Length: 471
Image: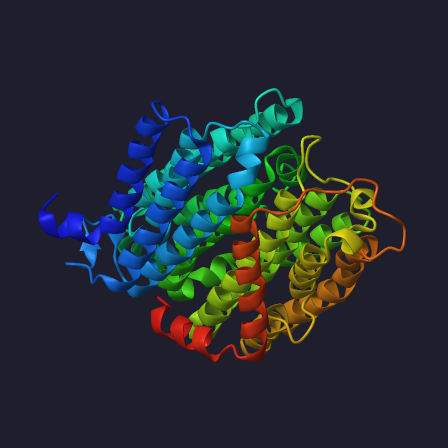
C-alpha cells in the first residue's frame, strides 16, 4: 500500500485510529460523556474529510474506491454514527455503559459501513461487512445484566453467522464461474447470450439470502423485532438505518454492473419486494410495543427500497439514495425519542407508556409525531416526497404492480403509525413523568426534524446532490 492509497482511505483510517485511541484512553480516563463527544468529533471530522478532501486516486488496491458515490455514503454513515453517540450521552450514564468501549465500537462500525459502501471487490465487500457485523454483535448485548439484550445479541450472532456462510458460499460460486473477485469483472464474466451462467446464478441466489438476512427481507426477517426490542435504543436506531443502508449501498453498484444479466434474478427480487412490504405491514398492525413496531416498519421500508433496486438505472438509483437519506432521518429520530424517554426503570416499550406524555413533554412528542408521519408519507414532510419519487420511478420503469402494492402498504401503515401518536396526545394523565432530555439529545433530534420539514418543502438540494453521486 502506497501513500496515495492511504490518502484515499483517510476517512476510514481516521475512524479506525480514533476507535483505537478512544478504546485505549477509556481504560485510563473513566469519563463516559467525554469519550462519546470525542467519538462524535472523530466521526464528523471523517465525514468532512470524505466530503471536501479530494482522494489521490479513485481505485484503492483493487478492493475499494473513492468515487463520489462512496464518499457520499461515508459522509452519511459517519454523521449517523456521530448523531448516535450524541443522543447516547445521558443513556450511557443511566445504564453505566463503558463510554470508551461504546464509542470505540460505534466508530469501528462506521469504518465497516464506509468500507462496505466503497467495495469494488467481493473480498472488500466481505471484509467491510464483517467489520460492521462484529461491532454490532457486541453493541446489541452491551447492556450488562439485561437478559433480553443478551438474548438479542445471541439471536443476531446466530443469524449473522448463517448470513456470513451464505455470503461466503455465494462469493465462492461466483469466483468459480468467473475467476475474479472484482465486482465489475465478475458481473461481466457471469453474462452469456442466454443470461447468467448457471453457477453464477446459484451464487446470486446465495448472495440474495445473505443480503435478505442483513437487511431483513421477508422471509429472512424473523430476527428483527426481537433484536430491536432487546438492543439498547440508540443501537436499534443504528441497526435500522445506517447498518442496513450500507448493505443496500454496496448492493446497488453490483446490480448496475450486472446490467441485462439482472433480468434472471429480477423475478425473485420482485417477489421479495412484495412479500416484504405486505408481511411487514400486516405484522406491524397488532404491535403494542413501539420498538417492535419500528422493527417491522424497517422491514416494510426495505421492501420499498428494493423497488428502487429493481428499477435500477439513473432514476431508480436517485430514488433509492433520496429515500435512504429521508428514511434514515425519520427512523433514527424515532428511536432517538425512545432513547430520550429512558429512565432508571428502563426504556419506553409499550404504547401505554406513552399515554399523556404530550402534556409533560410537548416538544419531544411533536418531534416523534413528525418522524412517524414522515415514515407514513404524509405531506408536506420529506417522507411523502421520497415515496412519491420512488413509486413514480417504479411506474416509469414498468413496475406499476410494485408501486400499487407500495401505495397500499403505505395507506395501511397510517394505522400503526398513528397509534403511538394518539397515545401521546391522550387526555389521560401520564403514568410516569419522564426526565428532561439532555441538550445533545435535543440538538440532534431538532436537527433531524428540521431537515425532514425542509426537504419536504424544498427537496431540490438533496436531489441535485444525489444526481451528482449516483454510480
